[in-house]
Amino acid sequence: MSELALKGGPPAVPEGMIKPWPWITEEDKQAIRQALEEATPWRYPFPQVTALEKEWAEFVGMKYCLATNSGTSALHLAVAAAQIGPGDEVLVPAFTFLASASCVLHSNGIPIFVDIDPRTCCIDPRKIEEQITDRTKAIVAVDIHGLPADYEEIHALARKHGLLVIEDGAQAHGAEYKGRPVGALGDLAGCSLNGSKNLSALGEGGLFTTNEQRHFELASRVRMFGEVVRPGEPRQYNAYIMGWNYRTDNLQAAFARSQLKRLPEMTAARVRNCNYLTEHLREMPGLEPPYVPPDRTHSYFFYVLRVKPERAGVDLPPAAFRDALIKVLRAEGVPVQRWQTVPVPGQSLFQFRDGYGKGCPWSCPYARPGIEYHPEDYPQAQRLIEEFLCLGHSGGGLGPPNGLDLMERYVAAFHKALGEHLDEVIKLAREEG
Image (cartoon, rainbow, N blue to C red; front, side, top):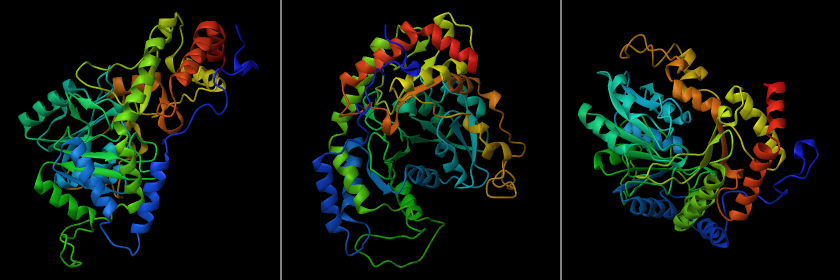
């Protein structure tokens, strides 16, 4: 039995073994070189941008796609195209990244939060209907960590109440729900191309998709300063509505196109790596691996473990046990981390409700009075945050060229911490908890 690296023993994962994401090949570099030649003189849309839009629409099976400068802007296009406006309410899961909710604020709408399903960590369809009011216009369903939400149930509720479904697929490129790909699961969808994402533009970028021409045309205006710009026609420089500059560039689009060619291959490698982790960690004391329902696939932007000290016979708060485990595992060379630290409705933005200033949009005369956000109203989101431990993002080693040799090292580190040295982890948790 080797000593913990925290106490001077050899780390389970050798320094330098983890290869960073994104996986950049010679083909990716050649794509950038070609795009550099196409980027002068400056003109919009660039050929790489329109090609990316066409290829992503074909990949997911949607009629229309707009490439944007971020996943957040892609989500805002979806909200704006859904004609969310002052006082309109949009349901959002209480556990997600801020952009899933702030995109609603960008159109002066008001997010109303819904607790999550404890197994999938996605918005809980059983909790949706109780939050619907006469102001509700849409539901944002987030494919959290790489796992699609329960779209059949969500769409059924949306149809019943005349709502639109907006898919936030930022973390789940390559995953499927009942045979349909992420990016095609809502009436409108926004995906991120942030450098850390499973489909990466290396820097920032996003993709908006829809099957409705009216949504596409409205989103096109919002992306381009509120103007109507048609291919082959002179630009009029006349804004019809409030719009933004959400355009992306040739280099980001070229890199994303090159990566898209390998997305199925890269997704399969992630799934293989993460299935190996689940197979070997499911019996580890104090841990619960991710749950994947049989009707969908997971693309593992994050590999999320839930810390359950009671399953190791340990009487400790989950957060204290988790924090001690993070310290021990990181010393072993395993880049485990936390992600969100409070439910989104617990963030200061929603506690202070100042927004644009003077309390807008909550103080807007069109808004329903008395909207407040209490984190304790979302117990499953709160519990997940207390138990959350993950691998992933750009430094987590889940994607290629990392393979099962690295996963074996990760498993060895967990076994070292929770098998050979569990007592020391417990002691550290009690000392620092």
